[in-house]
Amino acid sequence: MKFLPIFLAAAATTTTTASVIEKRDGIEDGQPIVGEKGAPLLGGTNHQLDLQNPDNLGQQSTDAGTVPNLKWSFSDSHTRILKGGWVRESVITDLPASHDIAAAQQHLKKGAIRELHWHRVAEWGYLYSGSILMSAVDNDGKWQVTKLEEGDVWYFPKGQAHTVQGLDEENEYLLVFDDGNFDAVGTTFHVDDWIAHTPKSVLAKNFGLDESVFGSVPSPNPYIFPSTPDTHNVTGGNGQLTGNASYAYYAKDHPLEDVPGEGGTLRIVDTTTFPIATTIAASIVTLKPGGLRELHWHPNAEEWLYFHKGQARATVYIGNSAARTFDFRAGDTGVFPDNSGHYIENTSDEEELVWVEIYKSDRVQDISLTQWLALTPAGIVADTLQIPLDVAENLVKEKQLLIKDR
Image 1: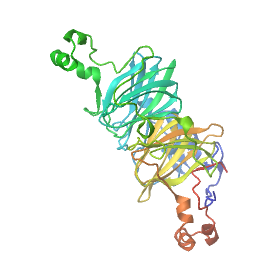
Image 2: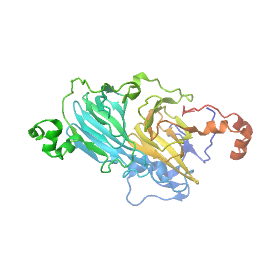
Image 3: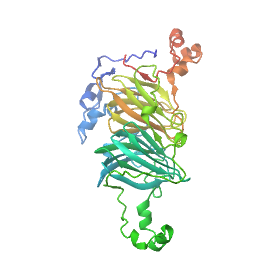
Image 4: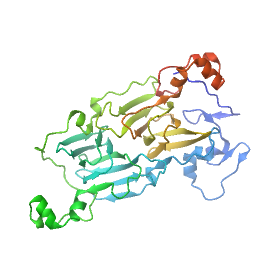
């Protein structure tokens, strides 16, 4: 892709990473000093965090205005340790700018069960380590029991009954929910919790069983608990959830997207490839060292992100001359406001950057800045940006998506 060349005006430059950035004097030492501006930090500070987040110290001279915090690390979340696994969340109280999406990392030991439950919101999951047994039943009495492996995705519509069980020795996945306020009362409902708070006489009448059967129902509910992998077959009901009704997306059955910019790989998981997922769309991205997710915005939703591997930089432009640059590492989450302009750059010389993009929508949509300019009359573009006409005439007309280092 032919991007408008950008030259960084600076007395000296450095290439400490795969990308070229302005040399920012004391910032590389964790100090807010740029030329004759700034001064050393003398009060309390976390020096390691300062070194990991040079853009918070003012590294990018193009940052301006007031942009709220758009980043939260799972490492800053409270981890709930349970028999059989653990869970930690990123919700609206952690990242107030994330209105549409909440998320969690969850880990299951072999045989451990995330107890039977349902939500008033939709659930989307991405398995990045191990394998799990997924089980769900819908309102028509149709069911699905299937094994998911690394790279697979699942989606449970609002209110559908479900559970998952770990099959490998260690299993871990990302959970996503289409409401940032996921911890609100009335969002998650557990079957044992409900039964424990229902009169036993009513339970006996409902199930046609003796009251004593329910004498050992756990209370409070364990959330995750140890067990052994279940081998029972499910039969009956109104049949299995298959085809477009399936709650499972098997990565092996879907090719990757074409990436003209040759900067990495892209997997889109939305209703074009996973029809049941009507409220959560996703992209799973791998970006080569020094690569760039081209300048773009999303016309239909906020973008929520989970960085799984590597390190990155992203500048978010929210209009009215306001922009802020953030540094991301593995385990970080972020959110880019609805329709805000942004890019993502792999700042490593050697390591690939892997992240997941999430949208509260049925489709992944983006508008490429370069494609927009290339498909607009060249004279208008040249006059607007005050660039040579021949540059405007030769901008690439095809989305590049992920641009290799150059």
